[in-house]
Image (cartoon, rainbow, N blue to C red; front, side, top):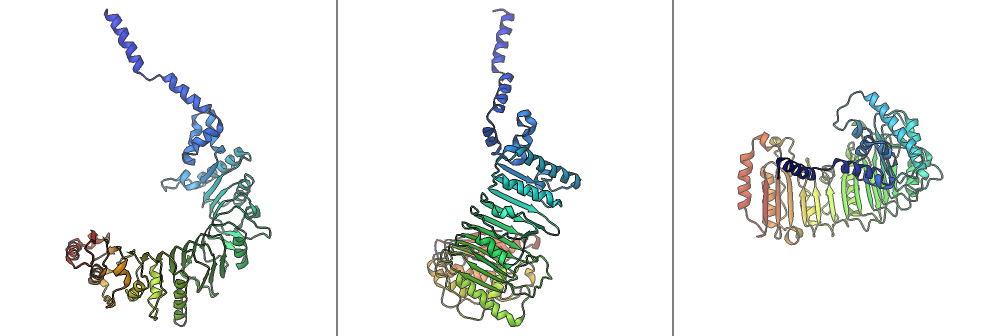
Length: 480
């Protein structure tokens, strides 16, 4: 074989190994010629921002993003993903033009999910028109997060939309409920910082959602509601938060929460304003998260409010999982009675920390939870803001060990451990008396390096590992 023939053979071999560019281009062209429904399905697998970027791929892709089932116009993620802001006015105009163009290109095609999120926009007539446009496109999920100043009314057509399944509103929108309000398909409703016409408008809104399953409401100082009533037979998850933005908020009107939800399974209540709570029909409640306290409360009213919180605990005493915030525990610290409600089904308890009464009420709470399996001290055992100033003494546990320690308690988790004598004393009590304990996890406070107490904590670790244990199966996990 001559040298020329050998070069030809080697060249043919190299060509076989090289990728064929024409085939690759053909592949791209084949994708572009797929039906629009398939291309939209492909785009739906990536973020809306990335889908918009595909418009540079060619004429076939230029406006394809506008035909996607989900349109998510989030100003921050689209223009300032890293949090840095510049030329805000120019970007805002670009954003508004982009939304307008997207809806025009949509040309009435059905929308599954429509998101408007821009706290800089002030042109409410445009927002009003965009919401109306989405409604005419039979939108199923609508999420609007807009900072409206001072106030703006939502279109009435929104509250009579038969296709809406999910509705999430955030901003100072005035909710003036029409007489013909009806949301037959709505299952999820989130409301944040809205203004209501009056108490009746709230009741009317909820009663017009016959299959509502999830309700989340974050109330503000200006919401104009005194008695907040939730009466929804179909509701399964409820989250109510009323924590005034202004520290000077002192509304002289008496606020009250009324809940009648016979199928409720989850309750989160964060309320630092309401003075009374009335909960009826909670036979299926499984999990509750309570943060109830009053920022401004006279000494005369103090005992009355404490009694109302105890009654609230009695109404939710069927739960299997319970979380009590620091504020709630501070209220319980003033409870002078001997008996708390009995939590016959409670297996998981998460606690804040009472910075004024220490753990005075802890024995009663353990006695009232005979089936408790998991105990979590989420905020630690002492106030860690000024650990060197902590000079209180741990209140002794009763001589008779609570039933849950003898029969059920399997896991204890303690966060923000700083090594105070009272912390060690309480931990040793649990180790000695919890006869079926399997795991004891102790997370040291993240500032232990700053406080220069690492060596002290390691010494305490050795001390606890050598302390008597009621359960031979107990494993201590000490995380410095």
